[in-house]
Image (tube, rainbow, N blue to C red):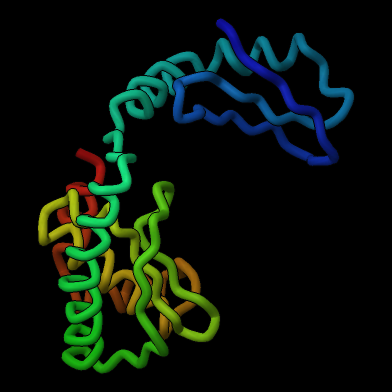
Length: 168
């Protein structure tokens, strides 16, 4: 099994499957290669499963015309959707902006500014609504604590099914 090791001042070993399907091992300085090999053997099924998952992820358009069309669509739909959902459920957000982030669909700043990826427009409406409401819940709970999930369940009981739509 091919892999790259990065040694650093950390306490634990972490495995990461990169977007290209390659395996990265992060380990503490001086961590024995024999223990890395043993860990990889133990985690073989996990590595194979997640490599397949990573390689099957959606590839996004990269040509400028497609990006601008997605940005236009996102501004027309996602910004009004976030404002409407914030009003309906009583969330207070500072602003909404559209980004071209590929590794995360949304984020919420400490000042309650919501950022949404234009690539959300490639997913079903139910998935877009989930991401917007997820980020709005972060305006109340800035973490993924049990209180955050209790709030999310309260405003969107089917959030788990909707989240799965982002993985297809």
